[in-house]
Length: 258
Image (tube, rainbow, N blue to C red; front, side, top):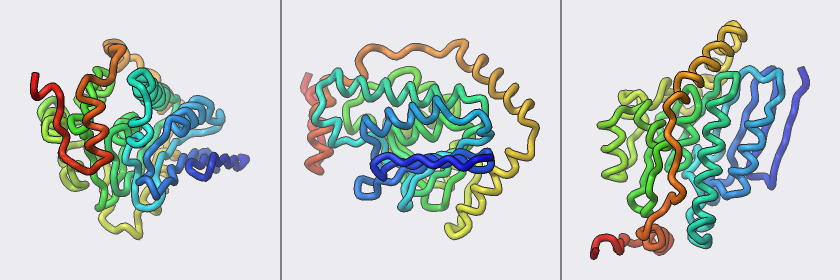
């Protein structure tokens, strides 16, 4: 089968070889934070994978999966612009979930915010021992909407979802494995790439028809009650949360004085 390779601004790369598609996030100076343009590219690539693709792997370079959306970019946008990016994240996640083939998030280092949603959209998650997961929306004043919450609750359950969001903490790889957030944990970092390839090989050894049927029916099952998002993804605390993040200080939210 042909080898396909696509790059965009050296921050994202897509290769398709031997029925395995790999999307690699490579923006190390920003901890692989994703800009609006990068989310648009991800959505485009995921929505138009070659027909012979049987496994999708999403991963990050430089020891980080992705720290989520680029906060510095969010800080420059009006509220409707921020909402547009969150809708892009949701559209990308849904596109991954609607794929006819299995998807794998190969997580090294941080998977935060939108990065965690990206990982949760994948069918399976394999993590290195240095992986960390979190969704610190409370620090930024982001009003998390039902589609994002549903993914967290489906994987973690209500209690663990509330814990991560209410405290804003990150959980390390071993805890993530216990929580069911991670399917496979690779303690030896030098073996991580090999283990990702082994997992892809196990998937390729299964009946494509069987896996397509499972994916199709799972999508039908899960989407039967998927709630829609509200128009606004941010509240009055968002501007202060973003400023505090950029300025590296604790936020003083307006809603605290109301």
